[in-house]
Length: 176
Image (cartoon, rainbow, N blue to C red):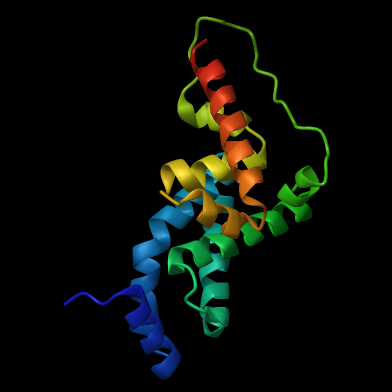
């Protein structure tokens, strides 16, 4: 018999069941790590550190989970906050700074061979953090636009705009 996330959460809260929380981690570890790897532009070590912090915070704050959204949505919200904190510490532009109106960072690509196609991973790295987060959450992790807006703590229209802009950039870059 397979337990639902809600069953496992109830067991953790009622009995501090480490095995139940371990199952929640096993179910969500790969998507969270993949999301953070994309957000850190492929820095697997940083992504692993942020994922570990995400699950540690989830364990510490599980009693604050209200069940109004899926557990994975709540977990991605923690992961986004961990990414933002790391970005601030590394003096990189955070999602909040970009939302406040700073210019979009465009990474220049060496024009060594214009016929060379960018792969998706490289193209995603070129997107700004807002666009990358929205696209990875919705397209890779299957969150709805509403869920992504909740995770990113921004208006629904902002998520839709970031997905639209990000997709347009990806189409342009991948068709080179």
